[in-house]
Image 1: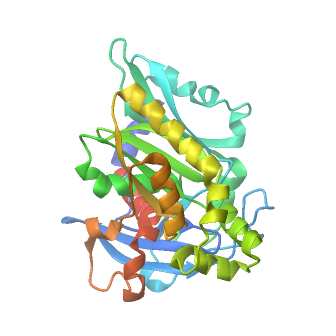
Image 2: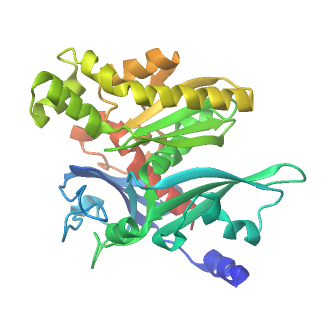
Image 3: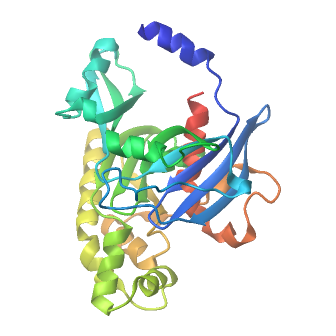
Length: 344
């Protein structure tokens, strides 16, 4: 049966026009891409206001919430990127060659007591040979989150084509961008989500570690609000424009994330006998110089942002001028498209 599925998968032709959507707390970050004989190109990009995220709903969304995209970034299919605190992301190791028996052990290896409550997917990172281990990137998304996310597109276009974890799609965009120049050294990608962040460390172009860190944009903003007596809009402005010194409240809340970054870096450097040379950051906190400086000081390495559009072909007028300076916000959405194209 598995062989038949593999054959059908190879025969199935995926879409050549796709919109990648990162679902965020207050907006949707969308990138439309087209695939043709001459490669892949960006056809449109936009940031669309949206308020459908809810911390109280089982699936993480408000009742009756739906996604609506303007025409320049709308398509028949959507690759959705979500960052939910209950998502489980792990690198698993299996002795020898990865086979169907090992595939059946993935839920147990992830520590899932009730596998039926999750949507589980995986990607082979390294095949095992002889005494070497096979390594698999495995993701488990709670069923209510998976079904709730798909239900955001109930009818018409776009239809849901794929659902991935936003931090991983940002890493996909990195591999298609600046990662292509780091195939011989070790670097990291950190994506800031609303409630959690996701760190991916690469050594010689291969994923060496992935870790979900319990700190995101929401906690930093809440601390700035409480410390300075601000409303949310003002706190967001101070975090991004650097017009006021907020290094103290940022430093207070960043400590758990910094410790996780240091532990992760040290683990990979010892295990792979390498040196992490640079960290690329994406997501909601990248605009804050205080956040970037805290990370740089803690790790003692360069922390960079990057524009995924610098590494992709752009069709005329694909990126509105008003968004030209915010390219780093589109890494996860662009990566969702690129990952979907890779799988078809």
